[in-house]
Image 1 (cartoon, helix red, strand yellow):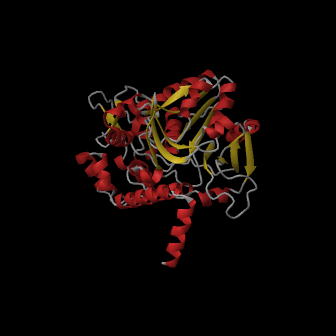
Image 2 (tube, rainbow, N blue to C red):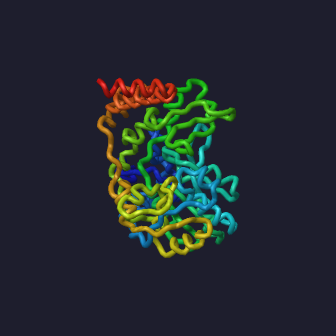
Image 3 (cartoon, one colour):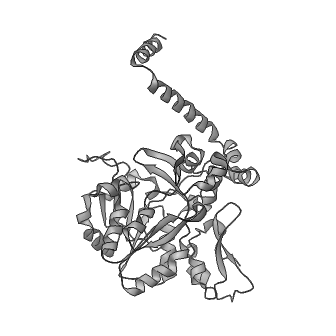
Length: 392
């Protein structure tokens, strides 16, 4: 039974959640992507999975009402977040009111999963960009349960995950705030695990946490309980570079119906790229988030968080102009299909070396080595070499 076209499936998990006989499981395919698997022997052909699937329904878009350049006033929140700390500030507001926050943390074997937090300590695990797809549907029942209990509920995810939740719930809740992250694309977590195994060997089993962004910029870091096991700048790390170049997202990411100014959530957040390019911005632009407020409910919630935020009104068009994923889906890298085939045959490292961006990776590594070498040179030697370079 085909629930939707495989190339349009986002792996949101809505179909499994709505199945009345629980005959649908969300499992990794051979490439590691999340897809539904139907137990045909138990299926009663009710059609609810197909009717509920977001890929079979046009999204209910909402044009943004307001736009802000914003960041958390809490220095710890801002410093430990990937961008301006808005998700952390939103979470703090919900938790202070005795509510529940749903976000992404790493589970066993570096598997990213959506989970529920009811304390600030639990919500800490949600911080930081996770450039892999999480399993969102596992918590949809819990979201509904918390909504039914009447407590404030915050759900943060990619737009396709939020749309999946909306179709699962099949009704709106006044106490539910949905926030989507401006998404670049979602590779399967299996690729990251395979990459770390290639770099760390048996020690990859010791990795307990991974980060892609921090106070020192875009860097892939893998930690164990005893410290950092692996660290590379984004341009020097094969997985990170492949992600940025669109080498191995899900097929649906390259035709994403959510990559547009209109959104399917109450609030949209992300980096405010292009801030101040046309209209001056009289503040530091490092670690500043964009917040698109899309609904009346989202506006009321954002206002309730204002004491936690610095928020400067900006033109919606400025945010759209600066962020490509608010205009169109990510572009796929040349050779991505070949990468998939090579990955299945030879693993991540060899597949990457056979990809078109391997040459760019080698070039970036050489430039980085030269830069590091130059940084260690005495100033006198630097000046001598500079003069010699100018003389030719």
